[in-house]
Image 1 (cartoon, one colour):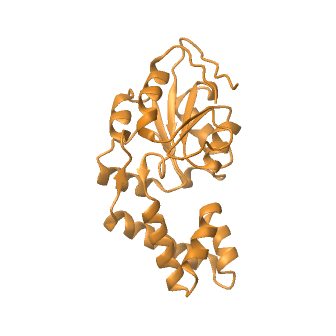
Image 2 (image 1 turned 180 degrees about the vertical axis):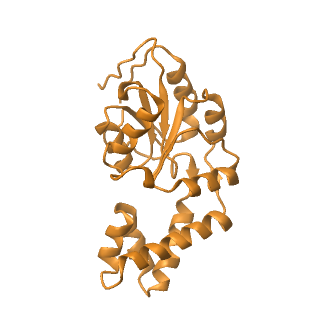
Length: 222
């Protein structure tokens, strides 16, 4: 059993990952990497397989070691920005209800993407944007380092023990756990290792997240 100690009387906040958690961007990510691979004459399936488990610069080192990394990154950014403008995006069911149901200042976004793309996607899907967004440019160390989630907690003025992290990916889960926060997993068929609670869909998690944010204590087990 993994207990989640509540701290009555203290403000509790919810910290959300974005892609795969609130926004369904899997097909967009695959399309961007397929286009990137085609530009260099690389096998798209292999490139995407590597990209799923590594950061972009690490991906380039594995699949395009003979190319200039800055050139590879510039092309990737160009394709991603174009996708934000022209791609088809959808918010996961329950995302709008959930974000509108949380008090202003009681939630933030913690993403490995960049803020301008997050804002573009949220505008396309009608989701509200919080005051605090910790993106790739805001931290020197990305997930699975605890730094991104700790930065969000600091900006909201709360302690890690008063934060609930909502994630879908192993690196994000590790980041939240290393930060000393409660971590719930969503949108995966099986629970990611380490999560305190698991929900197959975000829709299922909505009432529980809202209750956690408003309740005095929380205790759960996997």
